[in-house]
Length: 144
Image (cartoon, rainbow, N blue to C red):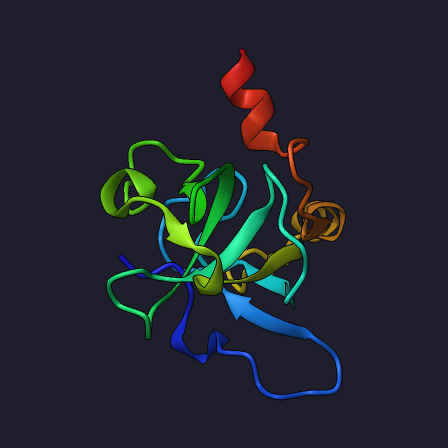
């Protein structure tokens, strides 16, 4: 189940940042299909971070998950949407070398179907946000 578009691969650049596009529902409500991500490649990962990694069984596929727990040999990663699957419950611990970077920022492109002034204002207020470790919306929703 793909999570990032195939053009999300990091291009060799002077800065360790890249842009990725989310496909699929496994990180809802934190990330939605079509969201763009600013990824800090090579960043130190800690528990709760949203990370980009290579799928352990299909390494040409990049996925985005939350680093839930450090275990022997790597990270246990989970999607924020428990019903979507495609995380460590399916493929186990992800080795450190497959974890590529940490998501720093999320941007939602503007919908072309909504053109009213109120929808433009809502988009301006909600389209761009940093992605925090344990302070995400999904964490608050699970606690209720």
